Image (cartoon, rainbow, N blue to C red; front, side, top):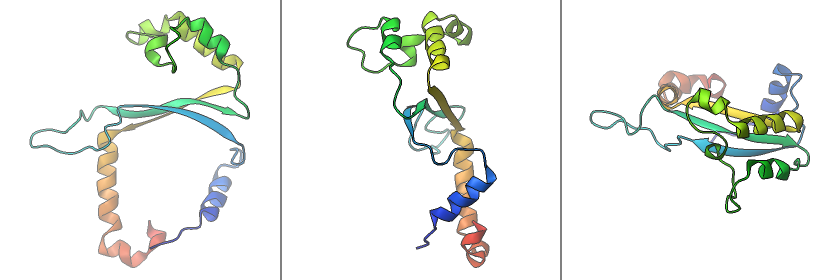
Length: 151
């Protein structure tokens, strides 16, 4: 088993991004789309469309959360809705979504509050191939001789 000191990794990451805030305390709210868990090859195709992307995104704030109740009230949702999803804010293709009054309210609220949007997207096929190649290299005889620094 290899033990890696995360302190060294953090130190060098801070050096490479000197203006990034590594010491702030943030709260992230996440939601995901197209998480197929595993991507594998079947006899004639894949278990999922390789053109799909896994998306992880949401809101983040530093310190205490801003009061979002006025925003929630402006959406005029049913009282049974506990979590706002995109379908509650906009529908249709991209241009139709841009016409949504609720999306306008949401983006205006984000702009005027201390909330920020975070977003990450990865292509499932691409990262499956990268994972296979990385595993092949990491377990090769040559990499075993070079040690952990090679990784």
